[in-house]
Length: 479
Ligand code: NAD
Image (cartoon, rainbow, N blue to C red; front, side, top):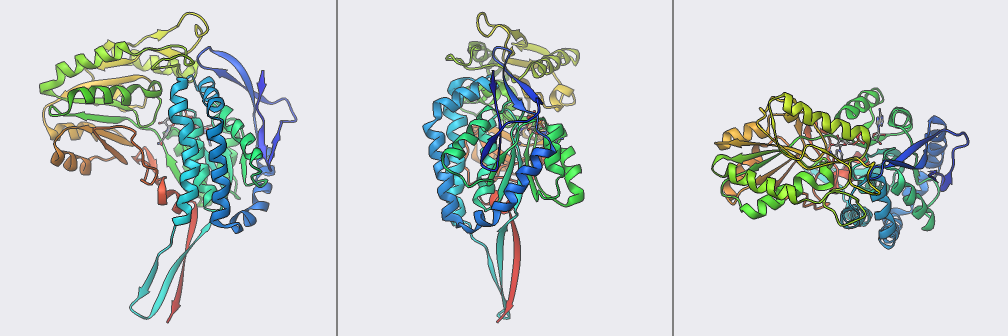
């Protein structure tokens, strides 16, 4: 059995007591590792180390910090196979996806912010020739970064990289359901001699160590990605301390498919947007709205394509692997049952799958398309976070827009049309943080990322992330 350790003050620290959590491989259902069930005790140690080193981390300047981040990126790249295998083992995702998306993106996160911070400038304002104002942007001190299980290293580094680049020291908490690549990252930090205490990684439960991080008075900001319910708990517990908060939460993302779309390209794109990572990407499309004239043929093409997707052992060449856990598999299957009760028809999929052999005990579900549900149905309103989409026709642009905007979420949307004027018109009116035209998950790290409504507050990415992790101070000097 592998046992993971916390990373505190530059060292791998095992728990002294026997309080460890079990971690399963979702593709087999078997427990294969243990992780520390950390508590306030470990947090205090980590905060002491982070506070002690922070002034000198800030003092080495952007070039010095960028150098460490670039070295971490190099290490991630040279350990691509090891990290991809770990990510696949921990999450059940196809290893090819981890190799081409998760791990390369973790390296890019470090490289991008190493460079971005060197270009990060503050404004100055000439005040009618009376005075000059300029803005200093200082690091906050010690910050908390809490991440989910669906893109473990990708999202952990998405937060750590800008926080460190801006001169903060970090207490990071990866998901207890997918801790392995964070543990391997601590080893890479040791390999590059990252100064002790600059980054601390604490494993354990959200309700224990996660909550302790959000409540600690020495932690000046929390960057959190995860579920909306957790986000609202964190907002409530951080508010009395006036902590800076960035919350990247759930989604229920619409795809608007018009009759003038490039049909083949759209079918391909929707399949990818719906089922990548078993539908467990916050940006995945989960509500498909198709213009009436092409509804029937688009639906048939989509079902046909969904049925060809291979599903099974994530270490082999498959399109879909396993869902993260047994309880998540149950949750998704319950939503499929609910869809039937709400009057929906399962057009394809909808079943638990038990591949023969090594993955017999894994948590698989076949790609599922559901028709006939009203926008008010719970299945159309609540985030399912699995390989499940609903499909429905629309007859006018106004109807499509009302359906797209008709949930409490506002994370991402896709529009599929060759009509550029319509694209601009709709993009402006959608209440969400990101709109992709004829594409999905095309990401430029300079762009703001985040959601409206129940999908969160604040934006990450590019300057937004560097602004979040710094405190602006205006200096006014009369001429
Ligand atoms: P989650 O909210 O259960 O957990 C996320 C992290 O928060 C984990 O590390 C967990 O241990 C920790 N946590 C749990 N309770 C906590 C508490 N009370 N205080 C502090 N920390 C706590 O989410 P999850 O199930 O890991 O991830 C799936 C969710 O994440 C989905 O809703 C998905 O849409 C969302 N997500 C959003 C984005 C985005 O960019 N908006 C990206 C990926 C995932």
